Image (tube, rainbow, N blue to C red; front, side, top):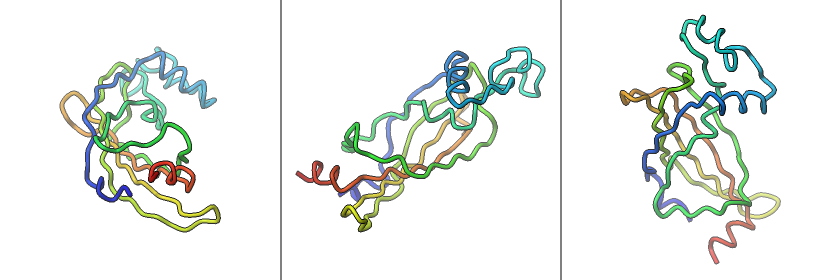
Length: 149
């Protein structure tokens, strides 16, 4: 069903690592480490400013992959991993995009399930990769039936 989309890339979208969003994100995680929220700690760190928690890229906009029409609900967020070249710095602009890496299906107790593997990237203003992530989206039998029609 989604195999024809393997290799497709989204449009690139600029995102800001905004101070208020980083603070709210850290609060929602219950991780109020000063490197995330205290400006003095950020200024005195080796980065000279605050950094974002490692899972902060979850809130970024990664653009749209043309022809990939997933529903807004009924999907399961499976495994997700992040790899960093360096931390995200508060105030910087990050350009993000995603690529469909794989799609496969497995039989489960609730019927056939689809597994869509997305690889996402974040680049700094110089075009250098800051992070990448790999995410698996699980498409349940109920959602597959709706999509197939």
